[in-house]
Amino acid sequence: DAGVIQSPRHEVTEMGQEVTLRCKPISGHNSLFWYRQTMMRGLELLIYFNNNVPIDDSGMPEDRFSAKMPNASFSTLKIQPSEPRDSAVYFCASTSRWNTEAFFGQGTRLTVV
Amino acid sequence: GENVEQHPSTLSVQEGDSAVIKCTYSDSASNYFPWYKQELGKRPQLIIDIRSNVGEKKDQRIAVTLNKTAKHFSLHITETQPEDSAVYFCAATTNNAGNMLTFGGGTRLMVKP
Picture 1 (cartoon, each protein chain N blue to C red):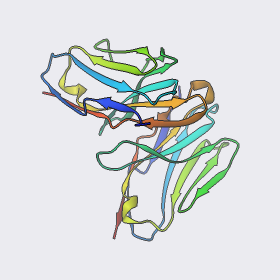
Picture 2 (picture 1 turned 90 degrees about the vertical axis):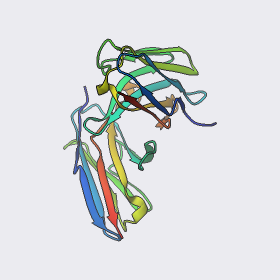
Picture 3 (picture 1 turned 135 degrees about the vertical axis):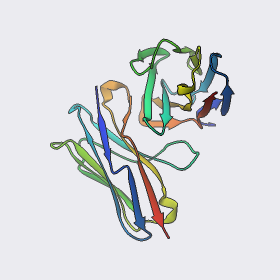
Picture 4 (picture 1 turned 180 degrees about the horizontal axis):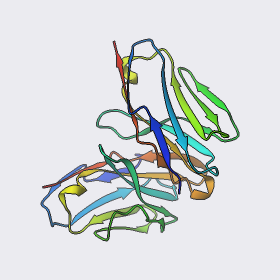
């Protein structure tokens, strides 16, 4: 397996634009997590899906952020409209029901100018 | 919800010395405590973990200890090497939380040759 795959690796966008980050979890994993990493706030959990259903989205900062998981092999995190303070590295991670280890994707470095 | 505190935020040691990173957690129901290592520009990767039914676990030069009563756990690295330089994150979760990890703020370890 190629591991958790995220795209794009880097994204630079202007304030006010819509940004969509994509994630493909490891095949067979049933839980998917979106994290945001900044120097100031460390690794923050944004949202957690189990069997494609959002279980906990209490970490989503505001209504500008939304996430979907239409099937077991794909998830998106959307920011609309984007703001400079959204600049961060966004990680997707997945786990299986038989193993508690979380496998992270390479991350998407988002810069909003 | 769970809150994980991690100390110190930065740690500098001489090659060959030992390094200790400490974490405390708030939710007494937490029962799984992994440690992740993140090298510069890379994704976090699991290096060792411990469950609440075990007090200590070792893997070569790294070890973790857990004190459930005090709700704290620690990472010990012996005979540090320059390649140990990275940011280390502790985390906590419960099985009931579906492996939804709450991370500490991270410790930047620098091993000087």
